[in-house]
Length: 316
Image (cartoon, rainbow, N blue to C red):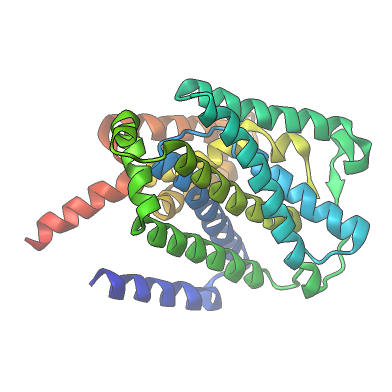
């Protein structure tokens, strides 16, 4: 039943652009994109329980790597996204090694990830070769090989593919030994170690995989906006945007980041649309804060687990 429902949902999403306005297509692009980034974060933050609050570092690094390769060396972003993912994975491996080898956990691991994102932000702001504080701008050619499209529906299908691909990977991972180990680490790392789980290796693998996927997303980020602003690409607000989706939807579940993005992204867009002027530009942050309070108080496990249990009770 679940498989048929998922297949029907995918079919509807594939046909949806035919009846949507260009504005709504753009809204769905952001829903899918943040669901993808949330799914990438979910591997290390949801399944493994290692709360990274600096995932914007991987988005920004991936964006700069693919953009510089394109602008300076003519490398197509379709190829550059692999380099972007590789660079982000290398950074994730470095952060993971420092954190996991020396037993950095909880709040201190959060600070470690934020520190790396801030270092990259400061470097990007002060290096003229990547535009400095002005930002790095990408030349528009309108060439598909350059990841540039005249029709916004192309971005719709690309982000839909990214979201579905990351979700399929999370589903596959959940059913494998590594996924079981990561869940055990999240629940009780000491007990997992006592049972013979190599917690350092498994957490590092989760961090590298999560970083790679996020770096790939950085390529889309750069070539969709056609500019990279260091304060935005490496900033804490972007990390919050990534984290809040799986938390609201249900961290450590396959569909949690998707459901969370379908809840949060439209709310964010509505708040920006109605309060962008008149001195209310930051009201969406208040909406986020209120939403987190509601989740913590009434849905601490997230929306998807509660929805799943409710549907289960209805079916009995």
